[in-house]
Image (cartoon, rainbow, N blue to C red; front, side, top):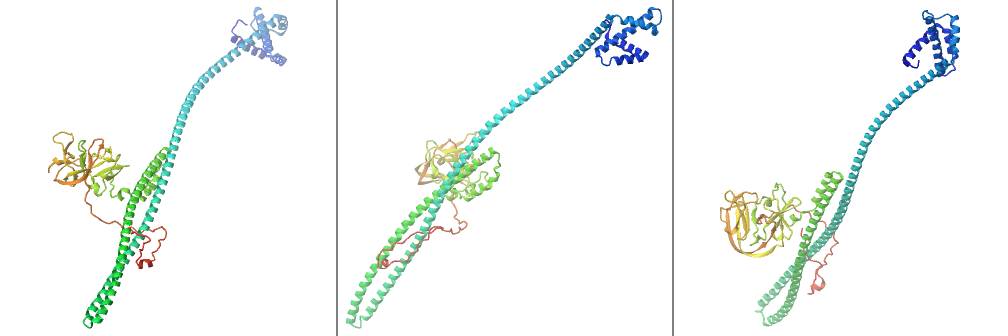
Length: 558
């Protein structure tokens, strides 16, 4: 049986066992009951042994010449006993059972090995997938770490910039506070000087009133002196003695009146001296007030500049930190509105960049002029230049320019810088040019830009003294306009030597004639100074001819 196919043997054995059980159910049941405590191998051995017995019985029937049917029981017992007496049969059955067990075990091990190999392949596949996922995760982790390092570096940079901006803002606030303190001190000094000036003005008015009263008293005394003289001439005809006595009396009265007149004249001279002294003090105070006004304007300009720097620093800080700076626009506008413009205090007018302003200066036309390197003494002292600061245009006279000052070129875009300190020189002739509404006064050697002739695009410049009526000159608008008037005036005046860098044409015009007008009347300010001591009138010494010194002198100006 070992040489056959095990599957066919198993099928044959199964069919045979079924036939045996069907033919002998009682024996089969007894045999199964006897094998209940046996192992599987013993059961298999017993089954093979029984199968061999049935096969032997079937072969004996065939040898006898009969059909393969079941022999009778009497014949089966000796045959079965003979079969069971062979010991090697049971051993062979055990070997077959052991072989079947080993084969089954081998098959189980083979199936287990295949299962394990399949699981190993699956595990390797999963391991490869996990390795790929791990590599992707590590790549993502490295990318995230690099991004985190970049963000940390950016955060450090932003923190450094924010700290620098905060320190700059703190410094600017300190400077602004110092400037405001200085401005407050200047305002206090101005108020104190105004109070003193007002007191001086009141005392000066009182002195003038006393002087006029003294003059009226002197006139009355003169009238009184002349009246006795007329009476004495009337009484001369009556009697010589009365006339002599009256004449003696009149002479004594004249002496007294002359003494009184001399004393009054001396007092008038004293009052005039006091008045001159008060006028001198008033002039000195006016000078001090002008200096203080200029200092106040400079301080206000510095405050506005510091505020602009502060606002720019805040905006840049908010942009870097992600805040919206639109909420600070109202505060910035309020700060700009509280400080009066220094240029307006000095008599200049601002214009907007877009040209929509309707001020006199913005509507004036400009000549494009060029400074010659050989003859630079050409600008008038009152020539007006346009300068630009923080996007705002305003105007300065030539005498106000200094080294480092910046003006706008003729193209209204380039910025020219004063290379060195302007020098004041004298000129003997002045040329007055007029083209449309534009008027310019320069020296004859001054170079003026004229319209190029032909198709050439190069700029041409001619001296102002060589220009004639009808020549086309270039205005700041870029349009050529014919000269309507060229007048050479022999006059000695001061001119400015100004050197600009770079060497480009500059737009300039002469100071226009203005119409005087008044603005809205300012309310009378509330003075916060100490209470001014009131004069008690002239002292007894002044009435006796002594010098009366006023407490204060000055004049209040609104």
